[in-house]
Amino acid sequence: MTENAESKYSLDIDAESLKLLFGMYDSSITKIETELSVDITDRDGRLNIYGAEKDVKRATRLIIDLIESSKVEKKIDRQKLEYGISLAREDNQDMLVELDKDVICRTIQGKPIKPKTAGQKNYTDSIRDNMITFGYGPAGTGKTYLAIAMAVTAFKAEEVGRIILTRPAIEAGEKLGFLPGDLQSKVDPYLRPLYDALYQIMGADSFQKNMEKGLIEVAPLAYMRGRTLDNSYIILDEAQNTTPGQMKMFLTRIGFCSKAVITGDLTQKDLGGNTVSGLEEALKVLKNVEGIGFAALDSRDVVRHPLVMKIVQAYENYEKRNKKENNARQNRRKHNN
Image 1 (spheres, one colour):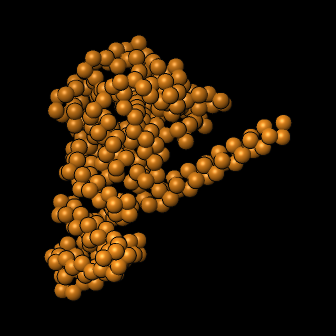
Image 2 (cartoon, one colour):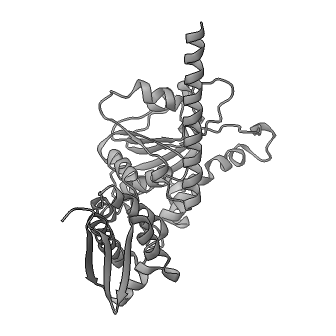
Image 3 (cartoon, one colour):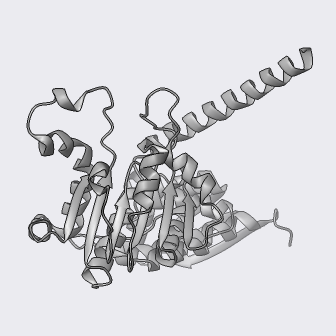
């Protein structure tokens, strides 16, 4: 039988799993049918899948993996469904099972935190395996949140003695000196995303107690100068807004028994003029240094609303077209000269 020959596969599925699989108004099962070019019918708990052999195999494996996943989380969310379909097209369904196994920790409400895409899995594995990891990619790919989850897990396991989270306080559109309040209230808005993630993972009470003890520190990057950070889990967020000097300063603060994660999005630099990004330079300078890991994420790793993924993809396509057009113009000028 060829891969394009008509095929059928049947699965017996319990009522609760069927409900989760079909989704509201059958939206999930309809999406699987449309995206994987199959027809699916339900006859009293027996799911029949029709189509070309290769498509039936992909759809069957995807459905089995989604049902297995739903037994833990009691749901099949839109993000997992869409990512599962993309993996099915690549014949890489095993990744969906691997992602479900890799629970980093749980939020204060008990919700599991784990990588949701192959790119995120590569990122968290790099953090585990290296003393320093650079995680870079567009907004919504979980760079900061996963890094903080890894830091909290290491802190609770007493692998490190403290957590240090830092960001460059870039004056994007406003001068710090003109903002109301003391220095802390001026820089707090820049650090708010870090506070929010810590609250969600640790709980407000635990976070406050450890802050008061000095075991968790959230501070602007400028506060790192002159320090040696031993036995610490250090996260530098929004690293695309560092200068090369600031990046070098940060990297040379890292002491013994410490781990560092540097995150950033090179498409969202707020540096003025033609200032080179410290993150961009570090990716070139350190690419062959042993003990440093690099994890590049892209639009496929966006785990926010599906529209965010489309926005990121649209910008990526726009920038690629511009780059191609610019290269073509430069080549024409060289030819004319």
